[in-house]
Each structure stands twice: as C-alpha cells, then as structure tokens.
Amino acid sequence: MQILKLKVILILGLGFILLLPAIASAQIKFGVRAGLNASNIAFENLPDRRERFGFHAGLFADVPVVSTFMSIQPELSYSIKGTAFEYLGNKQDLKMDYVDFLLPVAFKLGPVDVQVGPFASYLISKPEYTTYNDNVLVVDAFNKIDAGLTAGFSFNFNKLLLGIRYNQGFANVSKDNAKLLLGEGKNAVGQVSLGYRFQ
Image 1 (cartoon, rainbow, N blue to C red):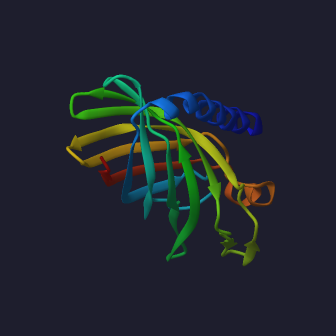
Image 2 (spheres, rainbow, N blue to C red):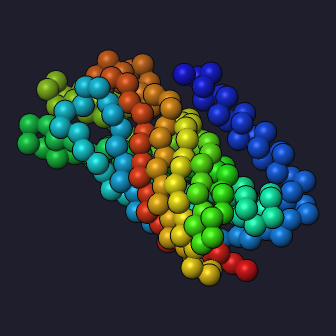
C-alpha cells in the first residue's frame, strides 16, 4: 500500500511538472470553493459506523489544455473527514483534518465539467481512538499520508459553480497500533460545494 501511495504522489508531482509549460502560456482562471463533506472510513472492527458530516474549503485553478474542451484543475483545500460510530449507547465522532491536493482532468461538455483524477492528502490533526471495553487510549493511531481517486461534476453558471464529487482513498489509514483494534479502513468522502471563478 505504501508503494501505491508513492505512485499516486509521483503522478501528482509529474502532472504538476508537465503543467508548467501550459501554465506559462495559458489563460488560467482561479477560483475558490467550499461546501459539505459526508465522510466514512470502512474500519473492519468499528461498531455501528455511519457517515460523519464536515466541510471543505480551498482554492483551485483552471488550466486549459485543449482549447475549450479539456483542462487541468489543480486544487488545494482543507477538508474535515472521519467517521461516526456508536458504542454501548455512546455516540462518538472520529474527526480527521486533512489538507488535500487534487489534480483532476476536466472535460467540458457545455456548462458541465466532468472531472476525474488523482489526489493526495496529508493528515494535520492528531485524532485519538479510545476503546470503551477496556479503556485503551490509542494515540498516533493513523497514517499521515492518503492518496486516491477523485471524480465528479461541476455545473457552471457564468462565474458561479455547483460541484458534486466523490473522493475514494486507496490507502489504509490505520497504523499498526490501531489496526488490531479498528482493522483496516479507507477514506471515502462525498462532497457538495459552491464555488466562484475569478475572470
């Protein structure tokens, strides 16, 4: 799995390097976007797991590659992820704060952009997990780096946009000290956002 994360990060880095000539010559548009997250982590051993709601906010660029048909849309955003669960009647949230770097390719079909591409995430919070049956507190329980695939749509209304997308992590987020209690788990996040593109 570490090799997979490394490959995704290398793809992101290579993609950014390949973008540099286009960035130098293209008419780039920049924008901001923010919205709602519905996230879950499919831990094998976590009881009564369900979605956790958070938010995301960030900056993006639109770099034309093929005239008005295709562009690259790199994005840097802050995103609150995690999962919610219930144990012995106690409702709990596992909150995980990430910085996401997304590098989707956008295919422009009239007012709609269809987007797909890789992303990499860095965990900036220090979530802890407590087991309630024996009161074990697990600290430093989660891997810092995640990577995966993002796909979605943006509906463009002049300078405004409405975005819907799904980000699926490919990496197990549990470190070895948490894996025995939680099992393996991967980030899955659905996002709805509003954005503004500067002209």
